Amino acid sequence: MRYLKTLLTGAATLLISVAAFSATVELHGVKIEESMSVGGVKLDLNGYGTRYKGPFKVYVGDLYTTKKVANLEELIAAPGPKRLTMTFVREIEAGPFGKLLTRGVEDNVSKAEMSKLVPGLIRMGEIFTVNKVLKVGDTIYLDWIPGTGMVVTAKGVVQGEPFKEPEFYKAIMSIWFGASPADWRLKDGMLGVKSSN
Image (cartoon, rainbow, N blue to C red; front, side):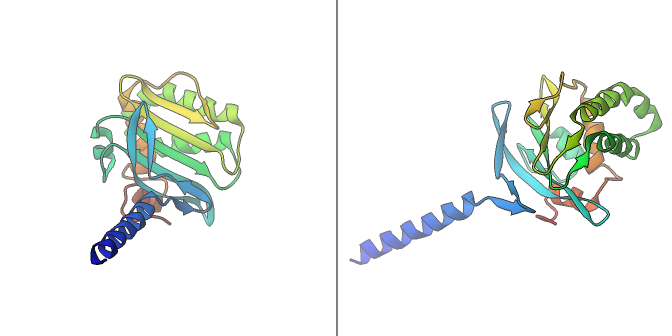
């Protein structure tokens, strides 16, 4: 009888542990997955947070990597694919949003580097202009896939050819993880300094 009781207690503990492990986090109505698959590789959630513009919530951002990273250099050096996800919680015009991304790069790279990035930034701007409006629930993926480059997916559709240059990917990631990020709370959240905001 004692053996059966111990066995049942152990099974219950195991079930509680499994339930806790598989629980999906939710932030502003957006489900944060514990892991995602990119290029056939399982990535784990590094961290997540909210992008604010003034008092308004704009999107929930999550970062997925093969190993925990705490800064931009570690993110770039991490092996395998990486994914940054933006799920919008407010409707915005895509064109001006694309311009804000360019501003974010300007704030984090030198003028010499910026001149080399212009063609790619123009193409990024065109991606957002074509999409016109980003509605509540729309998602953008920025995936780095080794040997392929950065693949941009908006509203479930891959947007043109990959951006092949690692330097361009690093510049884009500097918007969130550089010395002058667009939103410090979001930077901390996605780097796992705090779990949400």
